[in-house]
Length: 331
Image (cartoon, rainbow, N blue to C red):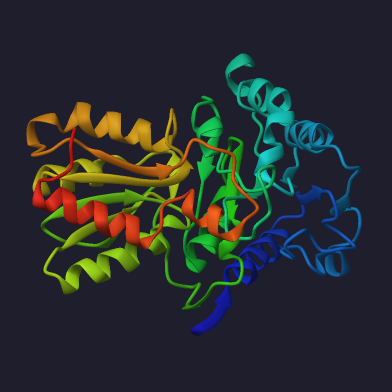
């Protein structure tokens, strides 16, 4: 496959098409995934090629969607369940957290739940408090669930393809603001192995650890900082479970300063977990405390201005980095 320009949405769709052509056990179930083509058009026209028996429209019931996927996976299929918004994941936590996450353990490894739960989260579309959250910490906190959060077009394709080969349930969170992002990619280039992070930029002054849409804010901030002589190392986690900590350790020990950037809420979030682990495992090498840059502990406003101000942006990330390098960030 030659170089081609794809959107994030296109890459996800192509991953599903290729997986379904290769494996007749892959089925898609969810609200409006068939005739309508999905809330964000990722499954558009798939019903025309694969039919209503493999692209299955369901009632508006998130517990039913995930429960059906769990049962189908236990019975031998590879279902891809779609939740229209990650905000609704709480309604599925018996099916997802109490069943899918624990069945392999409770059955002594005799049976697993090889399913993918596709959903989307994050801000950027003025969707209001009930449709704009970043709830990945819910998933990361639950043993037995894998969690992928691609930031790039290539990773949207490859991580979804890899998720569809895993023996355990994978929650696959797509950021709603990335669907129209375009990149020139060659999908035949071998991807990083499942569970590996990517070092997107290397610098000597600061390590910034991030994932999903915040990668793009961090890279923009790093470019501005470089023009001022501040060089940042940027690590894109790609998956939060498995968590690839070794590159973080390596670069933090080399540089001595670390920032964690997440769109999720500050308190008890992914940034808190990463900050704690860096502090514990790299303590002797840190020149300053690890700094979290994360979402405000408030519901997301429908106002575009207030929404943008409630999560990290380029300016906040760059300003925090400047203060860290100059030694003006308090513990």
